[in-house]
Image (cartoon, rainbow, N blue to C red; front, top):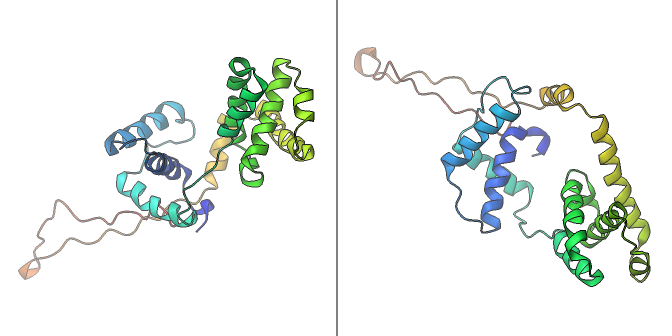
Length: 217
């Protein structure tokens, strides 16, 4: 399986649902999750989705199994946030640097750096960017680190490329075209209603319909 085969409109709530379990956030109400998705699609992305949110909780639960399979059930993740806190405590400018560096880390998740570099290097790159943005002189602190600064600069360049792309990106113009390329789930044919003796239909007003396979296209 590949993420390219799954509708992001389904994968997004599935990731939230699984993350709530992994992080012991608490049980998310199934109805609340679906209702929230419906509201977000209607209010925020109506320009890209002509119809309402098409998925139900059974689709999320099915997709969760494929997500776990793709992750090889490896749910222990290391984020840059923890080393970032340690670094800023060592610098001693927590009140100003931490919020800015935290935001940069959040933005970095929209790039590939989390797949290419270890968390501590990402944390240092985001901290370095925060220092530049806020005009903090931390050159001596970075000079004393035993790290590959070339890697830090590579991460910085990728995050800066993201910011440059954002300046030229027209979401309402480009997102619909991108979503049109995403494979959509195939709907299985409707199963004919069961028939009783003599060929009569047991339930003519409620034919049984197979649920669409929301994951595999």
